[in-house]
Image 1: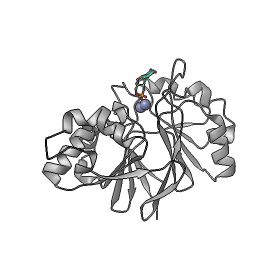
Image 2: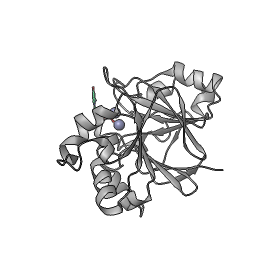
Image 3: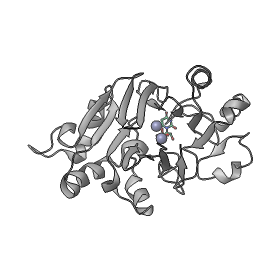
Length: 245
Ligand SMILES: O=c1ccn([C@@H]2O[C@@H]3COP(=O)(O)O[C@H]3[C@H]2O)c(=O)[nH]1
Ligand SMILES: [Zn+2]
Ligand SMILES: [Zn+2]
């Protein structure tokens, strides 16, 4: 079965010409939303879609470009579509997501007091594969992003690495490609400046050619087009395009 990946956004946190870096991963009729940032509702709308098309959501970490659309998702599911979808999230992040991010907007005395009142919460342990649908298997890989805060990359079906937000980690990319059969790398990419909490394009350019050939760049800034001929064989992911995996 061929999976389809469609980035509803490919932008960095504060990009304005691209939506937040969130994705739809489709397995036939089943649709997993990977991260749900502030711009996710509008991004879906622009593609002629809505949260009614989503069967489950997976969260990589708690930044607004990855979770800021969950309040709308939760309210729409509860009051409009009247269904509780699965929320896949690292066990270390579930209570933080509620207490530090969603409770302020979603809490309603008696009716909505916990994340479980809105979602079927599926806590994921790191470094273990989970079956999400018939043909989607996901493993969370803890990766460094913000000091002192947990953040996760995804390893999908033992062949696709989805970095989400992370600092440069060439050893991990080498390990995945050399020892774990990784064939495709969807990697965040900061175009300019120092990669204090992200991975820069200059850092990715240092990788061996055979790894660069597997890399699709995402989470980039508004001026991506200035870098089209400076990627050393890496490919910019296009927002909205459907990729067959
Ligand atoms: O120590 C910090 C923490 C945060 N930030 C900015 O806030 C953004 C939050 O979302 P993001 O993780 O996609 O990108 C982050 C950066 O743009 C930063 O530059 N340095
Ligand atoms: Zn981000
Ligand atoms: Zn982040």
